[in-house]
Image 1 (tube, rainbow, N blue to C red):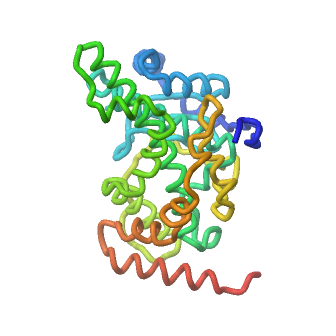
Image 2: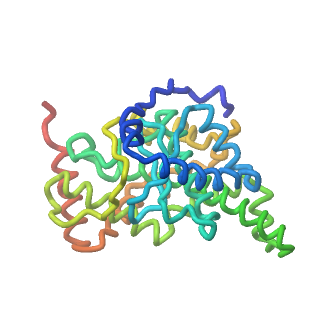
Length: 307
C-alpha cells in the first residue's frame, strides 16, 4: 500500500475554542511554555520519528500547549481541533524522554483525525450501542499512537546512551534497526499490557456506563484545561473492512507498517469482541456488576426497533 492509496480528508480544524483559551493567558505564561515546548521539540535531532511527526504537524497547522491543571494523563489531543497538549509536570528536563513519547503519541492522534480515523470520544449508548465495537476502534488508534510514541522515546534513549558511551542491548539494537517490525510489535503489545487495560478499560467503562444510566459512580478525574465541542473529522476506523483498516498503519513518511500484517492476528486478537470484554472488565469498582450491566444494555440497544 502506498501513500496514494490513502484517501485524505481536507483539514478543517476548529481552533476557535483554543484561541479563546489562549487569550486568557498572561504573556509570561505563553513565553515560559513556549520555551519548554521548544526544549522538547529540540529532541527531534535525536529521534527521526519525532522529527517526522513534528514536520507533519507543522505542515498541517497543529498547535501545541502546556496544560497546567490536567491530572492522570501525560498529554492529550482534542479531536477536530488540531490541538495537542502536554501535562505541565512532564516538561522538565528529568521527564524529557517521556515528553518525547507523549508529543509523538498525540501528534499521531492528530494525524489519525486528519485522515478520518478518530472515533467520537466516549459516545453515548444510542449513537454507539455496541460498546465492544467502539472500544475496538479506540484500541486501534491508541495502539497505533502508542507504537509511534514509544518508538520515538526509544530512539531518544538510544541516542542518549550512545552519547554516554553505554552499549545498547542486542534486543534494543534489533528493534531500532527494523522500524516496521518494531512498530508492529509495539502496536500488538498495547492490548496485552495490564497498565493499558486498567487505564483505558476503567475510563471507557465508566464513561459509557454513565451515558447509559447504568453507572452512578465518579468518573476518573482528568481536569483538562482545554475542552472543545468540535467533532472528529471522520467516523473512526472501519472495523468491518480489515483491508481498509490497515490504512491506519501509514507512517508520517508514507510507507505502511501494517501493510503485511497477518490477517488472522488482526481478526482473532484485535478485532475480536473478547478483547474489548477483557478491557471493560477493568473498571476499578463494581467490576462484575458494571460489566454485566454494559453487556445487557448493549444487547437491549441492539434489538430495539429502529425509529
